[in-house]
Image 1 (tube, helix red, strand yellow):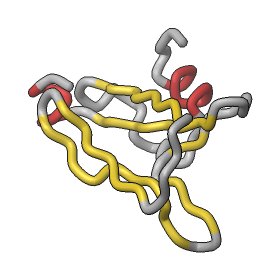
Image 2: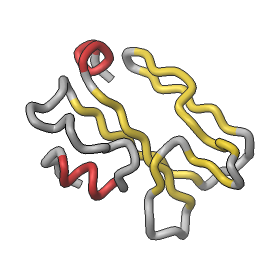
Image 3: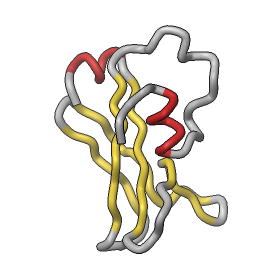
Length: 92
């Protein structure tokens, strides 16, 4: 995470459990309770908060510098990993 992304950008986080073929957007919830979320973001570090123990999680972060022109009208907070990458024109 760069200072520019921290100051002006957007961070999206996705998680999958080994064996699953899909990525879920954070915060991750079950039964109405959040079980995994971003707790704190700093330059060079993202801290997660979880209320469970799982050794086989994989995480992906999409870091978008600045606010891309014309990309603010759509609700991107609930997009899948692939949808977000496509929306911002990023490779995955």
